[in-house]
Image 1: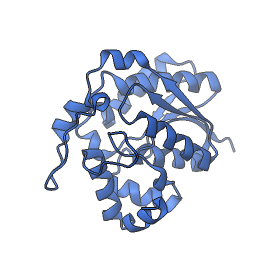
Image 2 (image 1 turned 90 degrees about the vertical axis):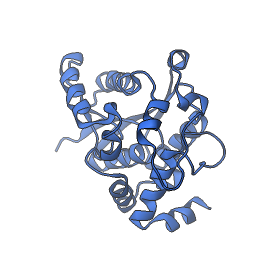
Image 3 (image 1 turned 120 degrees about the vertical axis):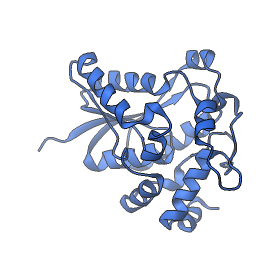
Image 4 (image 1 turned 60 degrees about the horizontal axis):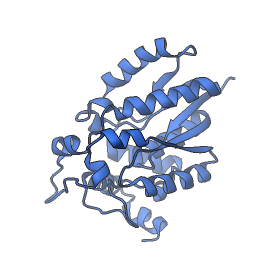
Length: 225
């Protein structure tokens, strides 16, 4: 039986890590791509992504996009990011602060080029239901539109897929832990540094997901906290 072949987009966050693990269970991951566009967390994202790929026996490549930093004025680059206080998630404010022009479209285009050149069938992205309601380039309609475009943009008719697009963060954390995704290696934080800040919305969603999934203490143990 023919196995599906994937190119995975990996930032070392919860969603992309679980999607990478799922892709290894569904078929062969030919390559995982991590993007450096000057984001504050780039050093940790690259480092953690490399460790995740090493653990999952997946080839890894870093793509540098210095021109994207030049045109973007995003909190992801400056580190000027809204913090979560009193348990309130600042989704709309955060979206506007961290938006990078056409970022996911650029990533998917590059991933699709690698997929076509390497004989893959699909590009795997880490999307989720929660962020899909706020970020337009994470939404189900974005995936549908991207696939319509890819039918014309690639001779192999590369597909964009996300195994977690209909899941919330808790469901992703629970499923990822069950299938052996190396969540202890994740870097969910919008910021750089030696440890996750625990205060930005991305950290807040990640930690809450682990707690609701009942794996937070075990995750801390495996992470060495």
